Amino acid sequence: MIDQLKQIFLFNSETPLIFTRLYFWGFFLVVMVFFSLVYKRKPMRNVYLWLVSMFFYYKTGGLFLILLFFVIVIDFFIGLAIYHARLKNAKTAWLTLSLTITLSVLAFFKYDLFFTETINTLLGTNFEVINHGAAWSNLLLGTHFDIGKLLPPVGISFFVFQTMSYIIDVYRGDLKPVTRLADYGFFVSFFPQLVAGPIVRASQFIPQLYKDFSLSREEFGMAIFMILRGLVKKLFIGDFIALNLIDRVFANPVSYTGFENLMGLYGYSLQVYCDFSGYTDMAIGLALLMGFHLPENFNSPYKAKSCGEFWKRWHISLSTWLKDYLYIPMGGNRGASPFTYISLSVLLIVVVLLSGKLYLAPVFAGIMLFTGILMKLFPAFRLNISTNINLMMTMLIGGLWHGASWMFIIWGGLNGLGVVVYKLWRKISPWEQSNHWAATFWKIFITFNFITFTRIWFRGESMQGTVDLMNQVAHNFGWAQVPAMLLSYWKVFAIMALGYVLHWLSYAFKNKWMNRFIAAPLYAKIIISAVVVFVVYQSLSAGLQPFIYFQF
Image (cartoon, rainbow, N blue to C red):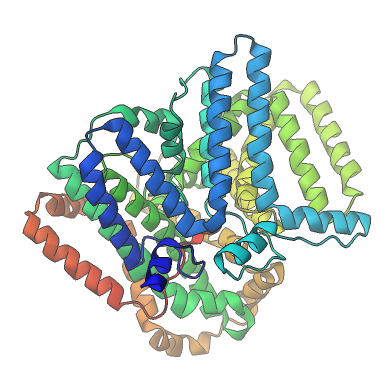
């Protein structure tokens, strides 16, 4: 009995509280039972859901709960200080303090190994990373963390970006700060979207804290539909093709033919979409059952006809965050600003440190000086180059958001290059305004394949692994083995085909069936839900896989 209680209430790194575990649905059922007792009393409801969310994070991230609570408390009081400060300089000082603390927390836990390796490379030292938090967790909770590695807290990039947007909006005067710690804590830590998004803006979510609970019949049907859709995406499609093809190929590309490597790459494009959008589908559905509306995070991204359009459809909450808090402050399409040059300098310093080549610093400085002279002499060139620099900077920083490594820098840089090249191409393209099906197909085909190509660096386990994968595709495709491979992997390819077909179906077709489910009587929803859940969990061929974006 005591062991069972420990399993329920104590953190276990082997069994995090994730949406795909049956334990989570038991947890959610209990949450909803008590929610039904407090939902009419908004202050009590907010306190209750904050406590529930903190417990959820503890079960998912262990003692990093303390870090989450620290960030919440610090930015809650700084938000109030900014609002009540009368002098602009005082507001700026409070803003600077908040950003310094939150970005330092993010940098310490996410880029620790990068900083340590850089210092050792540049200074010839032998510093080692020691995770004191892991040591305490091992001592207090009986966990078995590697104390030689600082694992980033689950979802740290998501909740840090949420607190940053809150503080910046208060500083700009676009938002009044909340006056109750529980309300702010609830906004930052709301458990459906806490660890993998979508990134929720304070201006979107905080007003909902003070509204009466409301859940219409249509919203209830939509919530159940979103949860079921997320389960199908994650477990039936994403996990199946990952376990049976993708993970094997990326772990050792040279052991597989070029055809298998290529199919693994196309499979990964589908997997990462199904995994991430599946999580946000479930998050939106769960939040809706409690009367809260989360923003859309994906809009059929593989229907995009350009790289720029893709990023308006993929991880929308991050793309819009980067646009509003990074791209526009840099100057956007109006030209460069001091923030552009500061960001560019910081990014180039990171590149120099990653490479370990100090001689690159004066090289970059010379390039910046030469470019600055050209921009001064030619105003038209200045506007064009500064706008493109802002775009590239935004995409490169988006890459670094995922982690400090050459892999993510290359991935972000390629996506930025794709956006810039398309901006230039569309000015001269004879097919830009064409709505003919062949032109549309070609645009989608090129965009999808380019995005898939860039994911070699996003998914690859090492730089050598990415080289091996490309070499296998280019020089060892294995045309003679293709028929045998089609038979050997027929289940995987069938699931991949199903996933892509469902994705590329028209909005009208998909909305028709969604609306039919929403309008169906309760008994039909129960039967359909039971069948879907049964089929999904019967498809599992191994243990449940963590969501890909938990690591970010």
